[in-house]
Image 1 (tube, rainbow, N blue to C red):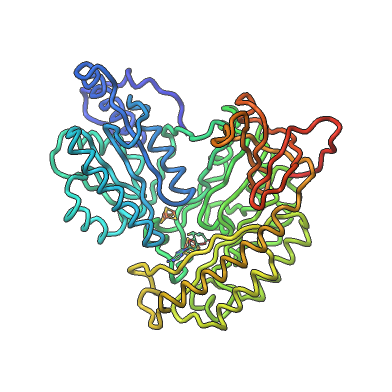
Image 2: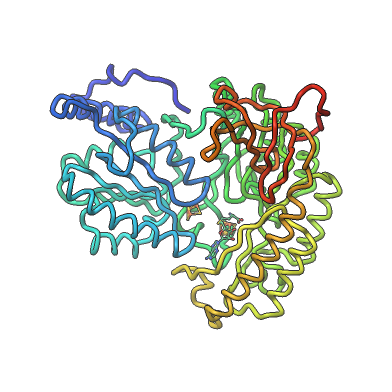
Length: 490
Ligand code: SAH
Ligand code: SF4
Ligand code: F3S
């Protein structure tokens, strides 16, 4: 992670160093020089804005990108900033469409401010077709890079300053992870921590392995050192991030299981809550269930993507578990932790999905009774095996199934997710409430939102809250007094 270094001590008139991260510090210092010139000319510092599309992994990458920009001297700005950087997602087509939509808007802004620089990075940029389309139809974009070289932002931006034409630097893959760079956390009190990058699972519908590359785990010492530093900096909650955390560490020189890592993170002083994302059911071990049960700081919440309830479809999806194995796994988890919240991801309309297959999905939803579920309409991703499959399901059938699934998920969710009503639970206070003055909002261990009267001094603290009013998907509460019983919750 980042140790403050004095950029002003770097000799920017010498040749850039070849090794990382020294090279990037050099370019941050170069950018700073440009920032000073900008400031002299315009009477203000240049502003930068990073916007994230996509998952927690991208959100964490954006914090690193923002860290680099602030270090280089930029001030934080909005969409009208001097440098706007979109960190893109391509998991479903609507993620791509959103980016194209926003680009149209940026073009108009750039006409007003011709000095504005526009950058695109992230998963969508790993697709040659997308880059080609941007070159062809969005020539006003200044900078494109991918998922493997975000650490190079300072160097790439500096290149951009000197060049009129688009700078494009997209890598096919990497075994290089450059970690010792700044990051600007969105929240002072919680942070994502990458424990691994990439994915080797190749679920047949999914583009992630193609745009994020092969699975690479960070060494536990590095992860723990980062978490200790975060704790020292006031972070109370960490979210361990990986596309499949359950296969963490298997390929390290000295293999370490995810369960072992979890136990070690649990020992870090100052950290009060541990979450992780995402667990693949095929790799979820009894050892992990035991670690979750034993570790007091691990939140009683597990996101366990189902994708489909039909064993036949699961096989074609290359998920490598059956409906029965999934159900048996959730039984084992609930036996060990009866109070656990389970959430999931489900895809509707995978090629060849029949009404019978879909009925199996509904059946699993009824049996598991998820606290909540993200439901997605299958989106064809070029280059994945599923895109070439015959039998793509017609749109209106998919829509009908999607609506039925959503209704069921919501009905069950409203029944189960309010089970803590009237109890006192620990809440990590996150922000002022946008809608109601004098209220703050925070999260329970199982991730549900709670709004209650309170002031900003509570933000970042974990406080006991009585969950007075269940509202279906969130609670209204009040700070608990000593007279209220405290439950053992996480
Ligand atoms: N690594 C995680 C998920 C990453 S993508 C896992 O394996 O669970 C997040 C979710 O997007 C997936 O769980 C899946 O439900 C959905 N998804 C991925 N590809 C999709 C596609 N082509 N169409 C629709 N949904 C998709
Ligand atoms: Fe995609 Fe499957 Fe990897 Fe998740 S495990 S990122 S769904 S290929
Ligand atoms: Fe999207 Fe990339 Fe995440 S495709 S879901 S941002 S890994």
